[in-house]
Image 1 (cartoon, rainbow, N blue to C red):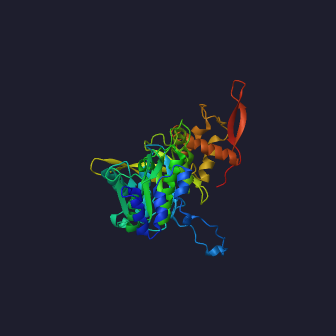
Image 2: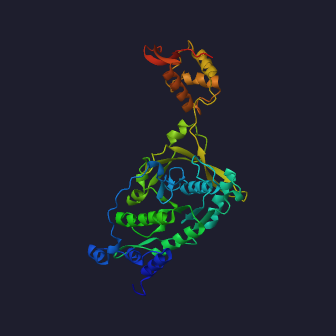
Length: 414
């Protein structure tokens, strides 16, 4: 180590602080670009020796330390992927508040009241404060409920660079990782959310080798500090297709290193029509945990971005849970019987484009709008046909053509 070798200096300081052998740390701090150099500097004392497997009673094995649903886990790095502008940051803020308050603001319930550090590398601090305040107002969280367990910082004031690309290869910046580690330990941080990942380094994001090094540094940090780390990442440009976690921008090594990954997708126009949301301007998106190394894949859940007035002239979007509407909500067996009586003998058409579509009768009986509630009405008719309450018959339309019409099948009994 030379006096002008800052990486080696920080590695030595880090090793001494953690009570570790400094030589492996010095080795890791240096970028190695050739097998010859690696062989000359390898520390033989760090060679892994085969370790026999010790059988233990399965009941004595420690369970996985999930802290939030089956996405965030102590000692592991996870990822959330989504296109720009879909409210990834706002979603992370609500989840951070859920963990800090110990409340299930969305579907998942945290294991308790956790210490969460939001490190947003794009937005200024005052914008973060607006979003956090709006989310607290919307979800009814009082300041005392988070009790000093929520930290937020901005890359505008405190830029973060964990790795750089140099002529010899990729260089991990140990000073940056050391500072993060020290703050996590001092503050007792349970969950660190870094948003976005691309702003946390200066390496070629398409270089799998470089991204693998960076991602594993984050995973190692989570392991050393026994905390959960969430990296928020962008998707690549998509040509209209739905994204998966594998649609993340750049090298695939990031997702390979993550133990859990989920993807955010905007609600399509067809889905909005099906859900009866034509007249609702609010954005909707889905969240799917589709990469799950340590748990079964999660089901798709939905989110709505509500507009919250701060009282200072600003309106801020806040993410809330949203459930797909049940077409049979507030529809009883008596309602079905009323529809059957209205349809009986009239032979209305099954085709929703026909002037005498059966859906018009359903709308009139149930007090629905045949246009704005068309998707719901179609779902009701399909379910009743499948159950046998209504049945299809092909009848002439007056032009010697037989058209599919509906007639009563098995009468409902009230």
